[in-house]
Length: 318
Image (cartoon, rainbow, N blue to C red; front, top):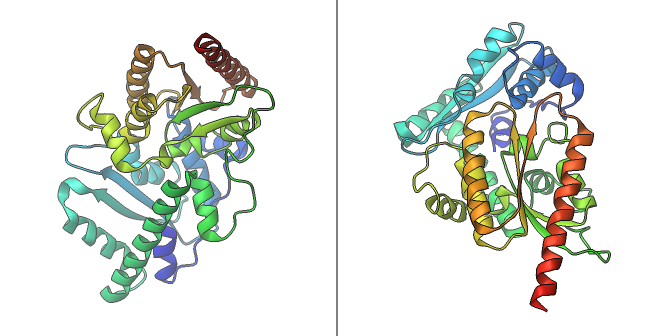
């Protein structure tokens, strides 16, 4: 969406590359040790862009509804970047805060657009086109059960690989369905999650992710557990996890960053709900020192256990 808006405003957009160990190392060197891994990666990406662009775009997602808040560290991203990356170029900000009404959001979009043009008609047209692309992206994602990256590749016309689950076949093994819950900056970053989605495909597992559900499905999931939404990210964890539990997945895997307070609480709620429902649950915690071999071992053991449980239940039913 923002890529479309910036291009419509005439900007030459430079996108940072894939996360790699060097980016994480550079980011970790600039922040305190208890900073979560996604933020360390974010700082590293800003450092990688510094010197290659005139400004850096950093949106702030404060609230998506009345009394629905985001992580405090995300709210302070622009100020944090100014403090820890003083050599960074001009930072362009836009704040999403639906507590302050749609009028505030429109003013924020206009203020961002004024950096490129004083023409309000051009800014409005760019925003309209960006929203159109966003709706197309959401429709494509939900209709075809695609991950974020797959949807973006199709829209950009760069889809060169097979879609997820297209390689899933039983090979004589019990085919299982696993629900993945977590934030896109963990589930979609191969460096952060040690290629978790790729490994799920190799293990012949059908997996489902939060972006494959509609907002209504996630909200229904939240209503069944906490009733009210407090964190912006609840849809990706509580809403998705609850929906998966009510719709017959064979197991659930949670992915979270070490030291994340909101995720710790939300994963615990889903764990308790899964225990009550008799559905296997495993939470993978990631930080920069997480060993890949440990993730693979836990993943293999969990999937073997889920397959064994499903096979045993089928034999009992027979």
